[in-house]
Structures are given as structure tokens and as C-alpha cells.
Image 1 (cartoon, rainbow, N blue to C red):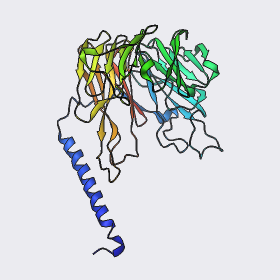
Image 2: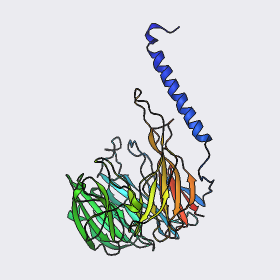
Image 3: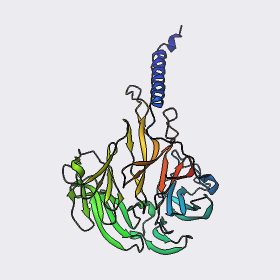
Image 4: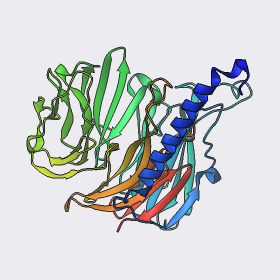
Length: 396
């Protein structure tokens, strides 16, 4: 017998209980399904980034700081993050984009995980650490208001101020798979300004502008050392062009790459003339339009954008999946969660490595767990950052 004031609560409690039980049964049923190429993997080594000063939740941060990993060559892996500066006047406030911060980069021996160098630079606060390893021991970073080319011992070899001496937080830095070409972009109102640069010299290859949301004149998505992939035309379609050329439609193997107004087909170069297109199924194709192989995943699973080796014949990618239940009356919907780290061979078209990773759980959706990958230049080692811990694996 419920008190009169509690009568309206009982149906809601029953609905919530049913949803929890259904969610639990779904998770249990998924767990009983046969695993798809998941193998137990033991890391070569692991290090907790807290020992280098990494703090996941500074200044009331709701989402953890996003650390990044980059192999600088086959023998070394660098890990970095941007942390907001904290003092007495701001320690109780949420960090603002573009506020005072520091870029931290730690260089580790790829065989043992032993620290070799640990340096930081003043910069402006951003979500992702802007740095790339160039496969020969050098790094490119963006700190304060300049691009810097660093030696294997973090000495500055070359420095170039950003356009208009703007801060790094005003720009997005992307790289070609080989790390020989950089794409520097910034947004002002509805216009995106882009520049292609040589990583060795920071010499400008080309600069142009694009109107956000208007693919009729082209919208850049990914670059290699000679080509640009993006969207063009109306209705929107996947397209390619040379650096100094014009856009032309791209439909590899007869795959329909036309899109609705609000649709996007994720696309990324993994070699100079090879792309991964789509999420599930995904198509791996060369720029001549020949389809090399397909990647098909279970229902509700999909690929996130690939991260390629800088000299090998492999690429690494995170497989995500949708978790949780859908209940519009209770405002509950499935959400994205990391599921596995995968490595594919471009030559054979086969999956060569699979590692189960811990993603965000439906039981604790406020505890966001994202993983970050880096593949060595020879494609033989994989670095995985999860929950503030960096682990290294052999890719066999």
C-alpha cells in the first residue's frame, strides 16, 4: 500500500525498472554473442601519464583532457596534452577556449616506456594537443602563436609565426599520412581559410578559402601529399582534386557517394593515393576509383576516422558502437562508445590486430572514456591511450 502522495511515482519507478532490466538483458545478450576477431593482448609496457603531470580534470573540467600520442620514429613515441593554467583567481572557474595554457610533450623510448625528454611551452587552451611526429625523430608543434619544427631532443630547428600572429587556438592543424604536408585552417564568421604547408620548411604550397556549409565550391575533409578529398557540387558528393586542380566527383567501385544536405560521408587518406570511405561498411579504395577491400562490422558498430602509419602498409582505427537503449518518453537515447582498436593491412586487406578497449558505459554515461591511437612509421607497434594510461603493443 503506497501513501497517496506516492501513487504517481509507482508507474515511473516500474518504467525505470523495466528500462534498466531491458538494458541489462541487452548488454548480457551482446556479451553472449561470439566475439569478432578479439584477441587478448598483453602490452609491451604501460605508463600512467599522471607521473608526468597529466591531470584529467583541471578547474572543474567536465570532460577529461584529451592526450595525444605520436611516434616520432620507430624507436620513440611522444605523448602530449594542453592543460589550462591555474592560479588563485581562476581555480574555481571552467577553462575558456583560447585562455592561457601550456602544451606538454613527453618523449618515451618505444621499447621500454622510459622517459627521455619532458618539455612544455606556453600556448592557448585547445581540446587537442597540436603536434605531429615526422617519422625521422623530429616533431612539429603549435605553441603560443607559431609553428615550430623540433629536433629529436626538442631543440627548435625552425619557427614560423601564424598568420596575423594569431594564437594556436584559432587554428586546426591536420597532417597528410606521410607527415610531409600540413593543412592549417581557421574559421572567421562563415569563411574557412586554409593553407597547405611543407612540414620541413613551413613553405606555403597553396592557400584558399571555403564557405562553411556550402559544398558547391568545395569543402576540404582530408589531404595527402598531392591530393585533397572533400565535398563538392549540389547535391553534395564526395570529390577529389589536386592541390592546384579543380574538384571532380569520386565514386570508387561504383559506390554511391552522393549525400543529402545534412549528411556527411567520413573520408580519410591512409596513404598518398588510398582512402578509407564511410563507417559501416567502409570502403578502402585508391584514387583511381578501384575498390581494394571492404570493412564490414556488426550492427550498431562503425569506424572512426583512421590514423595511418607514416611509412608502413597499415592503418589503425577505433571501432565504436552505439550503447544504451532508446526511450523517447524518458529522453534516453543510444550514445557513441569506443569498443576496439584495430589495425588493417592495406596490402592484404585483412585485419591484423584487434584490441578490446573500455568505452563509456550505459551504467555510468557521465564517465566518458575515449581512447587515442598512434601507429609507428613501420606499422609494427601501436600506442593506445585510455583513462590516462599509455600502453604499447606489438602488431603481429
